Image 1: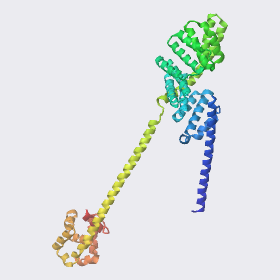
Image 2: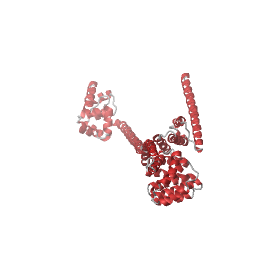
Image 3: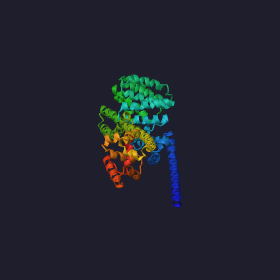
Length: 469
């Protein structure tokens, strides 16, 4: 091997080793970021470093789909949560959730949380059927995982969707199942909220109010408490007891960050101001409600974009599957076609080889036959007795006279020259047997070859092929 070629090979090997080491280092760094973000999530904190999570995805794609699928799923999910919770870019969050779900993680808890997030985005745009579908998918994987806490909480989400869809028989069934797992006070309060909400939707306001008031002072997060207070205010409104809503409305305005809750709370404060003829507060509450409605409109538009993507994904989770199937099927068909053409070509070649071999064997037999019978034509007397020559030639050489006469209409003298050519007689021998000049033999051969459609040099080959045909 030349020295310069060895240097090139060594350079390429070193370059490949360096690239592998660099890639492994980047993958390790990506895994460290995922582990850190996952640890924060376990504490209820979402990693705010969007750039780091995006870099993880860039590092792991596309080979991570084969070799680091679980890390890639977590990166997509965490980035979706980042966009959802901190940046309120719900459309982009939906894209990341969809990518995470398409990767089909083996972790049922993670897959359930991904579907729960997608259900939440649909719920915020009032797409209750789509939200229910995602929550039902979450329930299935949570149940399979054996994690009762996640399963119970997801059942509450499913029940809430059934309430909005007015399927109250299913609500009771789901809530009864959830009750078997709801063991702490927070879970119990959420369960009572949903029982009360279900009764409210069925216009059983007194019973609904009883359930809702029974857990209004339970310790839980602010938004859950505000949800309870909103339903209490709705019940008081339907019972024509608007004066009772004021304290609840003040609490919601002071504590909730949800524009929908705040807008409704201002509505009840406006109603109380009207009852008390408080024009100043009525104007203040009216303007405040308009501000909340504008915020709500802006958020609703953002949620609407994400909901559209999730609807499409729910009904067509693999939009390019048919194209992939077509390409794969076309590839298989092409391979089969190539294999068929190759098989036919090979069969044709084998047939040709067999035919060539058979023709060669026949040619060898014919040549041997000519050689064996040439002794009968070595006497000059036989060439002078035309009838005897014809009889022997037709007998020993496969009716050569008849065939050349019928096919090419050669004369007797020309057939005699053809017979001598077949038997490889030399020019001198032909001249001696036929008593002609050498030039005459050459001219006769050229004339015969022209009549047969060949050349003088190929005359014998042509005659052999003709006799074997």
